Image (tube, rainbow, N blue to C red; front, side):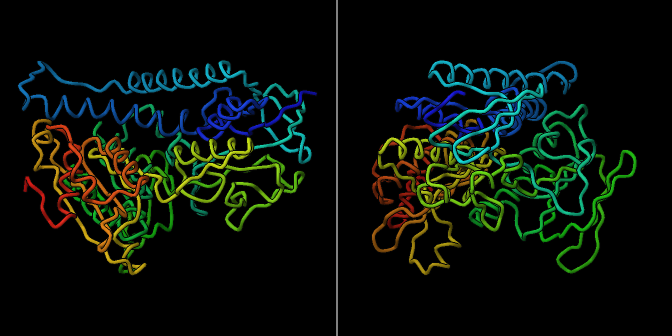
Length: 468
């Protein structure tokens, strides 16, 4: 029987990063993955493939709608080859997952393909896909099994017409009408992909706004832009039935006045969030407890009730984000090595990869008001930037919330071109507890989208933005 200092169950961003950091710190490391490729949901059927399709569809939309304005004329009709687009997406996935395998080899991490389940607290049975099994021993274990798409109790997902994000990434045809249940990150990103390719897209959201977990101003601006792009958005709608009839799907919902409304589509994407995935782990054999929401219960060090077993990522409390899982993987590895790392969960950014992109870190206006914190607001529109006008990306703004008394930045919320990348500036500033004036006095290259951050900081500092 092979014996390890640490075994990690699950090879998503949390698991594989934990494995690399454990190996860097001198631990003999094993990683167990039930699928034939490494990388988990994120690399195989999540973050990476969705970005590939978002980029491809964006190129197509630019060619059809914007090239002519730039003086680029394409003779004949610009056509979508969906099969080729999906194939390119898969090649990006394949390249990325092979990169993880390379990193495992480079760091001398043993990879086991199969379903890992606890035999007891220190032994893990690995049931391979060919029916064979083996057992390994580990002094410490990290559970990093991630999450799976959630559904509603009355919905039967057939993976053909009533689908999850996994199937939406590999459709064989462009839907005529795609109804999306859920106005969160996943639904809106995939909705925009198919809207660009020619589908009619209708979003049905239970809450009173889309991206309900983010700052209200971002929700309002994104809804405005998506409606301008002809996406239909129905908020405060409670879906009560989804029924497939042949090649049609009929979705019935009650609106905010209690009136029944019906939507007919050829595809229905269920994007109502994700649930922690613990099936097959046999946690009882190890004595590991779950919380009341089916997540692995952990303390502040991400330790379960069994002291040598840890859990990270989507399977524990907190935001279901790949980069949050990566930070937790690093933290656990370093705790095991006797170091004292920390994560400030307030400074884990959230991003929506629609166009315009949406990104945020820290507290929202709603949260600050609820907590009774006195704050200042500085906001600057993207359309006032020379760079935004040059690229014709004028939608959106940057908003900075700063403490009224100390001027410390408490939250940064942005929507616009490339804000997924810009948010890192805000994270850095807040990690060092910068004031709005600190940011306003830093030189930002001209012309860039990043100038909006400086201008918003100036606006938060005595309302002195320069270019508006």
